[in-house]
Image (cartoon, rainbow, N blue to C red; front, top):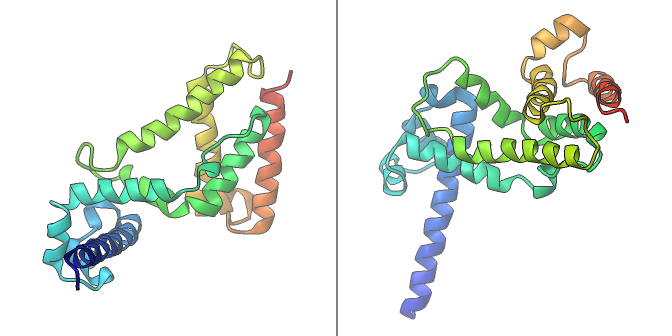
Length: 204
């Protein structure tokens, strides 16, 4: 077999192994948080030897960064592109969070109760996405679609709260509304509510 073919085969094998590790790490980190995740458990999920993980990643901190970066790159760009009409942004973000980002949102909940080493949770890649939402709001403000009295960063924070909290804290949502966030009835009602308050906030 030609050397070039062998080399390509090794590269593909290495990519497959790395992807197996990242997929297993995503399950482990998102389910147990940074502190609760164990390299041994990730190896078991990936059906590989624990030492092989250290061949690709120096340790847990490097692995969590790579895991979040890999997850972020897998999210379709259209899910991060906000609607042109600011009145539609809240409902859009709620649907994207519910349909595509729930696992990741559960991981972020761990951050509220854990001491996570600095730069070990993909802060920069996540900050980039959130800041893009702020910049989008600023651009809409310049076009006259958003009142100049509204702080773009605070509006973005408000929308993040409204589109994450009801999903992440399902029991609280159920105690208040009588509906679990996974129920279609709640999702429809909350989507309608988000549209209603957005109409009021961004009325011409």
